[in-house]
Length: 249
Ligand code: NDP
Picture 1: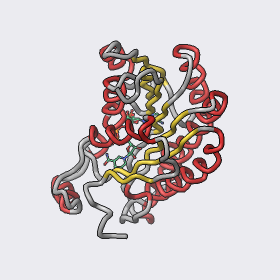
Picture 2: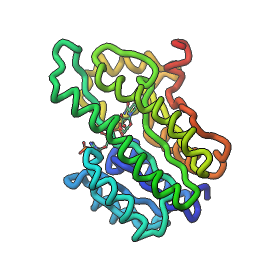
Picture 3: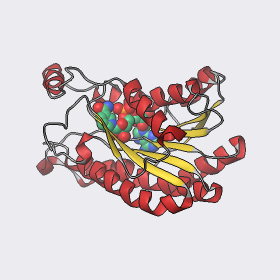
């Protein structure tokens, strides 16, 4: 088992890619903290998944709050003893042309998808530096390096995540900690639930593999990056996109 004996945190763990990663982490032998918003299904899910085979705990954490993020990390250490792998995954979507985007909507996307990643990274790295080991995986997107109409806030945040990852990887390497990002293509999760069918079809055509991705396909890559099999991988931006970006760079 790839994550045997490791303690893992997954933010936004109650849905989509996060939930798939919680399940894979447990299957690979980790104890997993499922962190998500207080009103999420997280507590019930963690109860259901606990013992399959590792421990699964719910810790409520809104990544827009530094206090909640810091508490998530300290509570994990209190309950499990260490923080070995963190999947910095919580995020929201949001489509709007720039001329219609309000300050509130722009700032909310940035606060969750970029500032939230920073808050979780800072709290996790403080703990991992004390341990002298750890692996942090930030969730970016294909829109971390590519543009797309209607995604000015989202793609700005994800571009920030890709480059934040590179800088953190350089800072963390001498401390025994690896930092990477994943760049999913369009993945079939609740984040895409409001897409009209014609837009969904158009998105499918953008992936040479001919379909949207499955959450488990991102989770598999996160588990690899969190494991010792990836011991020489840091600062990477690993696409999990069915070939979406291949013809565009
Ligand atoms: P989901 O909406 O299925 O899951 C996201 C989870 O994050 C939800 O449980 C959500 O809670 C939670 N969340 C939202 N805001 C916060 C917050 N402030 N603090 C803590 N948790 C929060 O989305 P996906 O699984 O699709 O997305 C996961 C990540 O993958 C995101 O970073 C997204 O940008 C990225 N991604 C997704 C792609 C896709 O096509 N699906 C493509 C590329 C990247 P709630 O439901 O209450 O909002």
